[in-house]
Image (cartoon, rainbow, N blue to C red):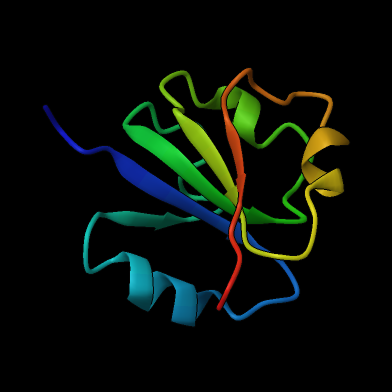
Length: 89
C-alpha cells in the first residue's frame, strides 16, 4: 500500500523547515500545487485557505502545527477526518 503524499499548507511559518522534516519519510507537496491531488493522504496546516482540504478525496488526517485548531474548524469545507494538534516537546 502506498503511503500517500503530505500537503503542506502553512502561513506565518516558513514551510521550508517543515518540508525538510517531513520529506524524509514521504513526498511533500506545497500548497497550492496539491490542492486537488488525489494521492494526498495527510495535510499539515496552519491557517490554511478556506475549502483547501475539500478537494482531497483520499485525505486521512489533518495535522495542525500551531497553537490550537480553531482555524481548522472554521473551514466551511472541512472533510470528516481526524484532526491532530502537533505539540513540540
